[in-house]
Image (cartoon, rainbow, N blue to C red; front, top):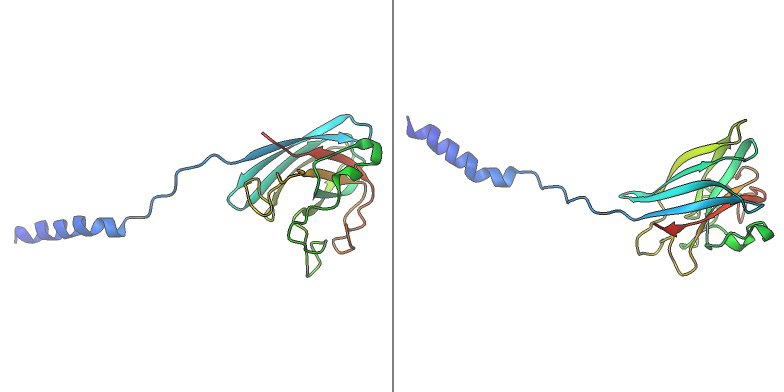
Length: 180
């Protein structure tokens, strides 16, 4: 009888590696980026911090000096923000997979389409958005392609369906996304 508990204990120890959980991979450095957001006069009015996660890019934005109301909020395809031309240098919405515009379009959305953001009476916008369709790492939807990309805030809300950009109005703020 003295040998039975010893034999059971030996069997348990021998089987233990098979029941052990697979260790989680070591945390790896995640890609990060920033953008200095400027208004149509070229003055810096805020910042954006972008961080790669396992599920997309987490975008944290702090901006002031915006008009109260709902605003379209997108990633645009070109990393240029020239206030002299109303930020048209930022190009259209970031759409490397050639989908249609709009979170409500069955053939959409663009990778750069994100939800509208609300600016209160104080004129500030503080938001965190996870864009699951883009990446800061090398790949098909990287924001660091040959001509870069930009964050753009529009004068009005995106209607989530109109082509090609949701009738969100003029571009009132822009920030070139840069590796940090």
